[in-house]
Amino acid sequence: MEEQYTYKTITAPTTSDFRDRGSKFFGFAYPVTDVDEVKEKVKALKKEHPKAVHFCLGFRIGTDGTLFRANDDGEPSGSAGKPILGQIDSAGLTDVMVVVVRYFGGSLLGVPGLINAYKTATEQALAQAEVIEKQIEQRVTINFDYPAMNDVMQLLKQSDATIYKQDLQLFCEVIAGIPVKHSEQYIAKLEEIKGVTLKK
Image (cartoon, rainbow, N blue to C red; front, side, top):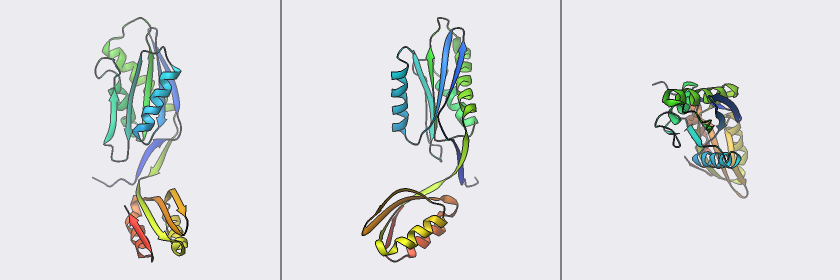
């Protein structure tokens, strides 16, 4: 398998509105990076839509694709969560969740009807989203003495690293994400700087 250096995700939340035989399916797509965010977003939607009957969702998080979930939330098994996740996957996205909020309209749609509704609501929400390609990063925690700061920061800048946290006192700590495609060489260079310790 070819090593992956980038992944695709969406930049901002989007919505969609699909209707079938009186039932309303509102799709909400979000960029997310952890399961806590997923829970918070579902909680917020339940507050916003107290009369809705189902909050079905699918998400995939992380660049290795192992953290994902599809939830039918009371709909027939496989009729909601799977089609939602299927659309996220066929768009080749990660760090994305879609919740489809359903208001029941009085007519039963049957499993094929439900699959189509959840799939379409998801597809439409994702079609509105701006997709960006991001670098897959290796997270490192760098501890160093203040005099080494210039060298450390310069290397991080050269490597196109994302700085997630920095605490620059007498003794400094920086948490950074270095793009995987050249993380090994930059980590080696950082380790050569006097007074630097790294946690990967």
